Length: 79
Image (cartoon, rainbow, N blue to C red; front, side):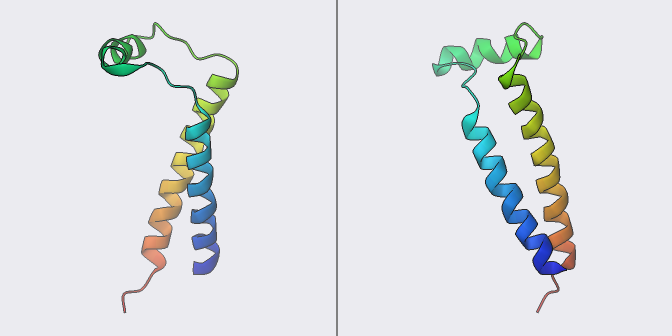
């Protein structure tokens, strides 16, 4: 059972890396980091289409990754 969760954790981690790399950058440079964060915080930029799908997929895969990581940490017995 431990091996199954370790394989699942590896799959979640590789999927999370892939999904994050597929997303478009929200802003460019230091000025974009300052103003882009505020615009995203107050909802001026709405994700649509593929961006929305990738955003929701990222959240789902991240939750699966963290849950699986906690399960693996619980199952591993210290030597």
